[in-house]
Image 1 (tube, rainbow, N blue to C red):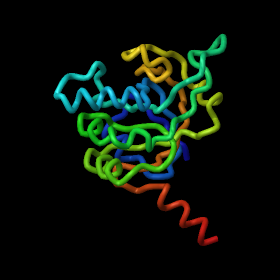
Image 2 (cartoon, one colour; image 1 turned 120 degrees about the vertical axis):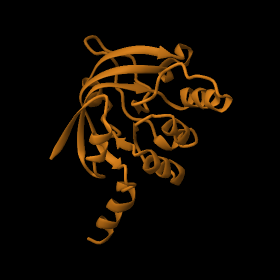
Image 3 (cartoon, rainbow, N blue to C red; image 1 turned 180 degrees about the horizontal axis):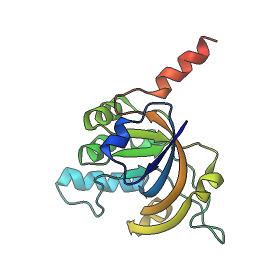
Image 4 (cartoon, rainbow, N blue to C red; image 1 turned 30 degrees about the vertical axis):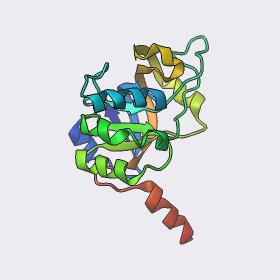
Length: 183
């Protein structure tokens, strides 16, 4: 069964998500990749305010291609999440509620997910054009000089993803390979 979630995501909705659940998101998410994360992290280290309020947000690790006519963005597939692992615990500790990306996360990130009762969602790599269809609007928030890596707000409708790591630390990157080795 697919769970439909209206954003912003609530603590109750996060608690109801379990590793392996299919999810469709509707509402707004923010975006950011390596360069934006590095800048945000440097501000945190200096004790300075962030240029965007991350509290209660989900961040999508994406750098979309240029939009074709009739679309808000071009193909918008997920970026490999491990590239943000160094910065993620600090962002979660400041109120970020979750991330959307692809691939496994390190132990520090998983511990921060559990500590903050957050969620890590996986979008399907290779489905960038399909994902772009669920993005209805794009708004630049900060770091325009980073181009596709700038922080943006997307308005999404039925954005497809899977719960990769739930708020209890259950992790499909650990549990699912075991199932297939047993076949």
